[in-house]
Image (cartoon, rainbow over all chains, first blue to last red; front, top):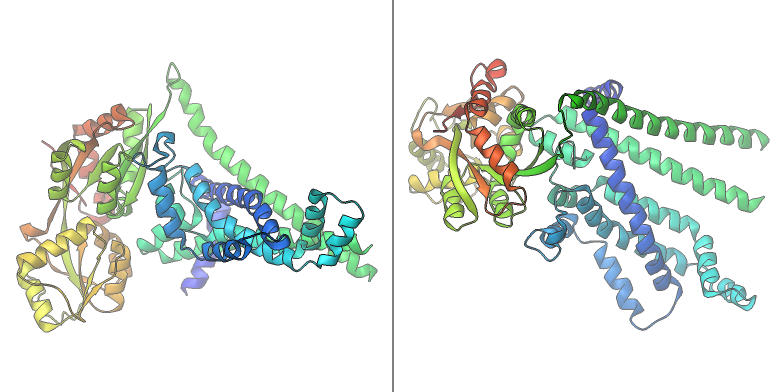
Length: 234
Length: 293
């Protein structure tokens, strides 16, 4: 059975701990975490503004963000590649085929997801609560933080969704990273390469490792979310 | 309730610990893995600054494993350069060469390579090696072409009989070769029997195997995958099936010296010997035949 073989291969790979594999895992982590954090920094304020405030063009902004969530990663990869190409507008930076280029592309993928889901989460916070905070003399920033705190379940789900999108993404990182061994190879691009070569067992094993990483990350977020809830109840 | 709290607290702590261990192990493994390489460094008297050279090549070349031996050997001779292999389709490799996003190209589409040099995007094209293509198909051979050495006749038989043929359809060197073979046979490949899938060599071989179809493959990838697919070589040896590789240093490359060093090295006896030996111990025959001047 190829599936059992894949599990055995995955465990063997992890136990043998080849430098190459650990390098791929480290790069996967580095790019995914960088682009998730950047996605939160950029997406959380956007999400808050769209979810909690009223301004002209808000509906259009929400529609645009929701559309951006659906852009195929490979299109984002293509645009970033053309922008970072030495013939492109940012070519002077020489970033194409680097981890930085991958993080940029992945941030463009994570930001709309995080912004859109945070907007939805914040919009569900009762307006009266914020009104009350304001009447008690809360500043705009304090009010925003209160709303984000009240909507934290949705916010954490947004961060998990953003992380999930970048850690499983392949189209964009393949285009702008180039799958360079020891440099820009991540688990997903390695999976594409191994399946292309017909090494299905190895590809599946790498897939299992990727799932394990995602599971660990989501386990951490769930634990964090739980510990917050208990703190509130006590 | 208390029990629940205790167990969940223990669970939380275990989870956190497990996470920490995973991180620590991965960090330690990375560190440990890199150390031996660093110990070898002091042999070099003065520390050299390592610059990277981007080598754009094709997926089929990378999947053959050739770079796995070629690149370390070059880096041993030239420790000041690190070769970063970006493996894409031939069309994309040529395009990133035109955009100066790669420093040196190693591809197999001779006419396009010569055009690239003629347009001033590459300095010079030099022969490096060649491999050959084979037409592979199911053992049952419904088109009755097995054992032949005339690619045009074989393709004519496939199209006239309406036997399924899987095409890379990805603008790769292999795809371009396939199109040139069809046009040499005077056939416009189209119809239900002709599947253009826009994927790499491995995917194409897998699909051909699964759907008992014919396809054109480079010998290296076919040999590497032979044991996992149900396809046999039906046509080989036609001169039209030869596949020459050339090396081109990109004009005004970002790392011109490194690119030039690599190009000079790969056509030198050092590079050519490695190419001649590659694959012999695994397949009993070389995958590439060196042919630099």
